[in-house]
Amino acid sequence: MAGRLYCPAMIAFLLVAAAATQGAASGKATYERVKTSVFTIEVHSGNAGAKSALGSGYLVSERGHVVTNYHVIGSYVEEPALNRIRVRNEIGTHEARLVRFDLINDLALLRVDELPSLRPLPLADHDPSSGERIVALGNPEGLGMSLIEGVFNGRAAKGVVDRLLLSMPLNSGMSGGPILDEGGAVVGTNVAVIWLANSLSFGVPTASLRPLLDGPDLALDPGALRAEVNRQLEVLEKRTGERAVAPFADKVTRTYVKVGGAEIPRPPELYDCWDQETERRDKGYRESVFQCNLQFTPSVDGPGEVGCVQIKVEYEESDHQPFGFYSLVQHQAEQDHEPRTAPPDNGVFSPPQCETDRVAAGAFTWHVNTCLNAHVRHPGFLSFDASAFTVSRPRRSILVTLHLRGFRLEAGLSLLRSLLEGIREAKAS
Image (cartoon, one colour):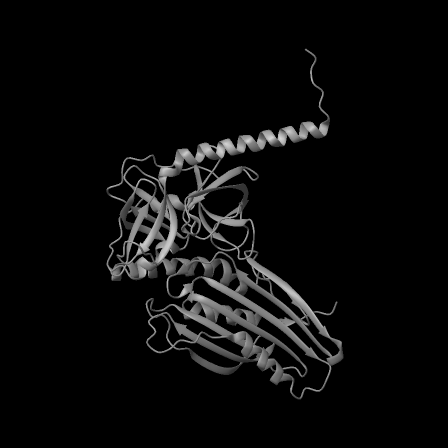
């Protein structure tokens, strides 16, 4: 029998079709193998049909340990007397208790004491190779357990918290579900997506999970849980301070970035930064903007983001008379400042405490405004908002705004001081 001849285009089509068929078969086999070890996680107030938080999780031990995200069960940590945790899959629904949590890496470990005998998912001992196929499981929007295929792209380069960079469309409700490599081992935990991004998602590496699997169980009374949150906030502040705040004060290794007619200390590479130039020739006005923030900052139920740093520097210049110029700059500073507003006795933030002063720092005199909102449930930690603009030069001003969340006062003052002292006039090119 004569052999068939295929053109190159036909061969390529057959190879793609075969790969798609193999992928579909592999996805089905994976789903059937692990579906009973993946759970929907719910935080509820005791009402059997209602929940206040929804996520996913997966079994990691024969003793009934289930992994999920900290942000999925964060409301329980803040109010354990008012909430309960349950897990469910196609086999049934079971009450669970919190064992340990890691708010920095956004992980939590639960235990289900009466769970039927199920197969725990194995943990990988290394990341996949970049470009390797992966699958993620979870319960998107609470609509039913789903499997999503994607590609591993390595570690994200920004932020002080390690994150896996994934090409896959994770959805709300899949937080806490497992990410599996081609061998079926867990390489990470679903954690986040970027708003309006179609197929860019993130995971917590399994290496960040391993320390959580050992150690004593937490006491579950409100005081003990809040004390553990405070302890971890101190760890986060120290890590972020060393990597994201202290480098601004290092005069030995300091380099600069040009912003209009000014130069500012260059932020460490872990910041995500961008700039913009605006020129209004009809008004003789020029504006240069440089702003940075930290990606993947953790969150605590109530106060929200912690370990969060946002920096914005603007250079404003006018060709016209100085009359009214600083009023324009001050108006811009007030718009950028945006301190939190909080009603009295709201239980989360204190009302803002604001101060205004003139400060000589570095080469300039600054008009400085700072506002603090204390975290009521986490004494010593606060939200720090500051704006400062130079009043040393006619028709030119440098405007600095800072927003820090979940730090103590010294960290905010240290960063503000380092920036103001480090900013200088740009050298002539």
